[in-house]
Image (cartoon, rainbow, N blue to C red):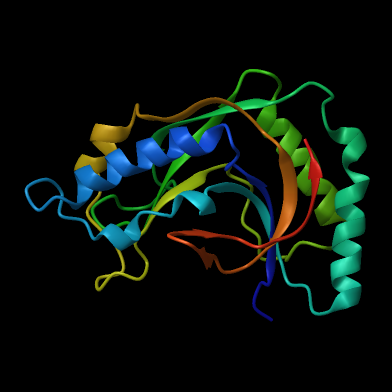
Amino acid sequence: MAPTHFLCIPLITEFSRPQLSASLSTFKTDITRPNSFGIPESVVRPVGTIHLTLGVMSLAGSRDIAKAIEVLQSIKPLLPTAPLKVSLHGLGTFPGADPRHVDILFAQPRCHDCDFDALCHKIRHVFEKANVLDKTNPPLSLHATIVNARKTRTGGIDARQIINKYRDYTWMRSVPLKKIGICRMGAEKKGRDKEYRLLTSINL
């Protein structure tokens, strides 16, 4: 069964949208210019889809969905009481990927309020222990996808110069996180933007 949902921290809020809209617009304008990198505009992810994935799941029916919702509710004691602020920096790809022909480029989160990576691993572990996440999930590597070139004619792009130029780029700075939730696979069109449909969420 193909994955149907994913556990994530959405990064689009009323505070982050202006920052991400501006930074993604600047980035898109730059990399798509013929005299710059000449990359197809379609590879840049829509603003409304930017998130951090903690794991994917295949929920076959109402019973599986109810269990996933129950597990999400159970992690509340793990969450910090103070607001978490996250920034997104840089542009890179997964270890071992060839930047001369790469399909995914991402930014990485930074949080100075807590050990954010450890917190996300704890949350994911609860879902793993409850057998809600797919067994095929790769090890957790927190990232926000900025470029997805899998559907291009060649299935990837030469990103060497792009990575070099944007390795220190700030996409958003000190944005309070609002929620952690379970979303349906497949971004849906909303006006000029796209976003993932949220099945359920809890406040962060």
